[in-house]
Length: 466
Image (cartoon, rainbow, N blue to C red):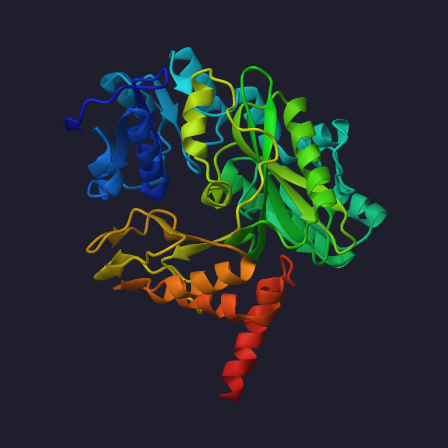
């Protein structure tokens, strides 16, 4: 364990020291918020992350195991031991890893450690996708036709699919990130797809149970940021458009959504609050909706944590969600008022260490790194020159978040920033983002979650002609 002295800072919240049970840019982001609040930080890290920036900038750091996540960042005993050794009072899980692990949150309570997130029972209820659907329906939030409970087998899935009509989508009850998810177009495929998705879910989440719902052919994916406190107050902080995605993995997010007018925005925001109130939600969370071509919206899922794309909301509203997380976890009421008005337009690009053509991972040392700046530009990253992108973890190396006075300026400013974003030694998705932002359909705001399929087909056709 290493310890560094830090300047005297007067705490403005009830915590003196917190432990960050995560890595990479989100760990660094939490450290930044804590510095401004005068809260000391403890960084945990695997042996592969010993030279990571979150380790460098935390007040203390402690190694919790070898590179494999199961032996380090997912090792509950090691994380709790690190908190006890360093005298941390609370744990911030970031996103991924243990962030939506209700069992971990319960253990922290038993160890008298504060969990910076929603209550364990809320995580458990909303983490089970079938149960979350049922709770949403009971709260009066629109849901797609489908199963209210996990399906017992492929035969039950086939029977329900025939009742509600194809296409349908199979989803892992305990899933997320596109794993354990299959679209089924016709009856002949349902048994095979059910078994494949269930096996994938069992490997990924230790739970192979599945549920099924009607599949919308070309929906938009629009999510609402919510915040609740222990006093029972819940607010929403507007929407993020997340339709540009590949294999259910988001690539670009923006706010506000061009698909929403004030009436629809109010209806969706009210539905998000209604669901959050029904489950007595505390801290930061996101209610995700699908929006069809007839402007009807349906509940998809709730994420019981801070999101990767939270900077979009921070930039468009001029607020700090991570600092608010700490305050609310310490017992303070939510300081935001409901339905804050956006200031301009914000776009976020997830910069991944991937081949932009094949999407294959590209780990290795970063030999050159130049980050863009200028008006309205923010970069969240843990990378630096000579940093080694590890093959053990998620491929995202940076988030580029850009604000403009309107969507047109935000697009042009993002393109300018991408031109100045230089990463050498590894391949990244920077060229892909440039192509997407220059695409006419994207610029018109005419897209759905199926955008990337058509986009890639257009790119391949253009290359074939050249």
